Amino acid sequence: MLNVETRHAIDPETAKTFDTEKLRRHFHVGDIFRSGEITLIYTHYDRMIVGGAVPAGKDLVLDEVKPCGTPSVLDRREMVIVNIGDDGQVSADADYPMGRGDMLYLGMGAGKVTFSGGGRFYILSAPAHQTYPSRLIKIDDAATVDLGSQATSNERTIYQFVHPDVMKSCQIVVGMTKLASGSIWNTMPAHVHDRRSEAYLYIDLPEEARVFHMMGEPDETRHMVLKNEEGALSPSWSIHSGAGTGSYTFIWAMAGDNVDYKDVEMVSMETLR
Ligand SMILES: O=C[C@H](O)[C@@H](O)CC(=O)C(=O)O
Ligand SMILES: [Zn+2]
View 1 (tube, helix red, strand yellow):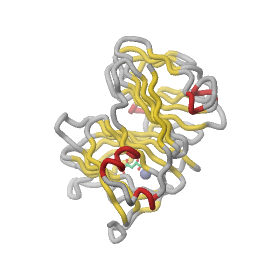
View 2 (cartoon, protein in one colour):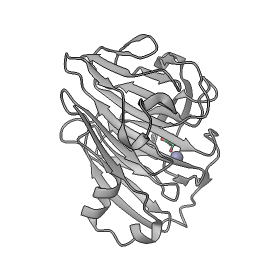
View 3 (tube, protein in one colour):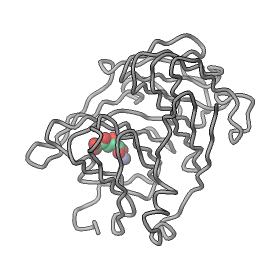
């Protein structure tokens, strides 16, 4: 079964007026990992798709996605799949066995995508202009950046999987950030990047834990309270940062005008409101 929801792009003037319920309706990503189903959110933020597939022992096939307007989803798109569950397999242009934490890049034209096994697959996709080779990337293949410190509760390692230092993609850039034990803050100091939209998915949170995800223009911030396997859409004008009730991991993904991870505007603490 395939569920597809469309999210239109919201401008910052409108977002300012949102209460919690509206903020979540537009920016919250939840309930995408449904047993035996594929659930996609087609966003108008750089036309990024975020979603989940949980085959639960059966085969789940992703082929036509109506809002894309092509016979098959990868006809004019690239895709990144992250397994956040047990061992599973993804088949497209080849068969890819995937353990927990593995990422798979599928290039434009890789064909329909079949999910199987015990995996919980997080799906990301953006329009593509050429075919780059599909590739299974393990955490040991990722480029790493260590940031923050224990003293400021933001010690973390950024694992860049689909990133120019590791492999080529058209516009999608994806990685995973792991917080050191006792550290709770991600992406603080905060930043924005008008060239790219971003999506976050928080994982490795115990049942009772929550992340206060910060968003909004730097001088007009809002927050959403998220639990395990929930996430947030981050428009180009928004900060994307979070503080957890404990440490956690999150998967970040960007698409837009460039793939330059460092092309960000840092936000000074003075600017934050
Ligand atoms: O533009 C980059 C993305 O927001 C994230 O990679 C940031 C992040 O993982 C972090 O600072 O913890
Ligand atoms: Zn960012």
